[in-house]
Image (cartoon, rainbow, N blue to C red):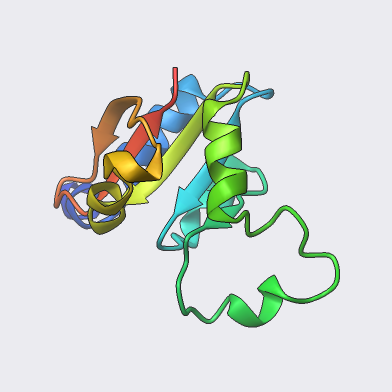
Length: 124
């Protein structure tokens, strides 16, 4: 059990829901920011989309990075596709991609970090 302080300042609310809900065939994607704890707690590879400039940019153009950094178009295709997709998204990115011109439907919000900075969405 995590101490109360850790539950307040960490993404644990997101990971606790993912541990219950995420099935082997589901996709999990991070959007806009990279939470380093995500692969550890979910025990899976987690693509990141919409990073902007980030320390991971170097790896995004290296051989073998295909699928690790989906473009906006690839992300929207996955989100609208047949698989269930969980999305960890920063509040700033949620506002940005909610613009109707982007073509993103926000799905359903499952939980947020207590500070509200990150949300967990599911497409269906």
